Length: 290
Image 1 (cartoon, rainbow, N blue to C red):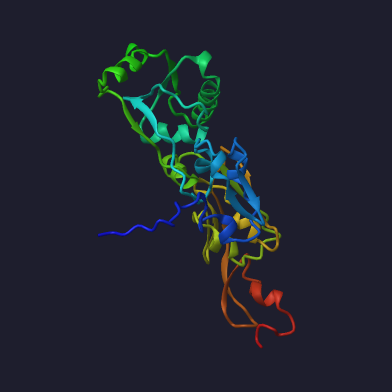
Image 2: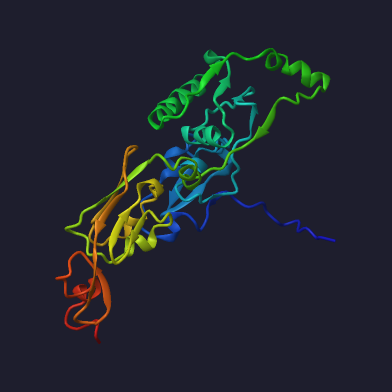
């Protein structure tokens, strides 16, 4: 028999350990704060806090977070039939990122609604179609409410189940969206080769493997980037940055292998003429050898 504590409290919504502000202190990401139309997500001493009392459960923060770090908030349940979202529609319109997931996971291609009664949804669908047109995907259409929808209140009153309609939700997070739309990009990783010392720190803190460094190449894979900003936060030389870009392409820079004349360890270099690894170049007066 399982015992329940009378003092137990339900978990509070917030950003978990996956939040880039937790994994890399100093990261300025505030995607969830910017996405919250209710203004209940705030930063307190660099940490994300959510005032659940004022939360409208719109789910915009879930779909804006690049790391999928928002916990104890569930994506909105929506009603759909075949390839169409149907009424009742939520008072707050969904984000474009959420609609993109409905497009990919449920093959939704239209919305049943009265446009004059749902201006927020109308604007969301218009913004979605702009994104879909850029990616070459089919656009969404608006449909007038069907008779079944209009008679929905009578069905509920008579307790008649409408088997043609279902409810569901989509997977939130930038990582899931990138997996569903690998052919398009949202961000571009910009590298300043003159400032970069090839220390490899950016590749180690990138959770999406959008930056990969080997003995032969420095790869920037735009299709993987979710815009978390870890790379530019860590880079001591400020040689790397992330910009919003829907037409970015992956870039490959040639590198070579070398052996440090100070510590005798192999390292990746821009040129075979380089004699010291990034660590030894930073630590003068034989600090590395000591």
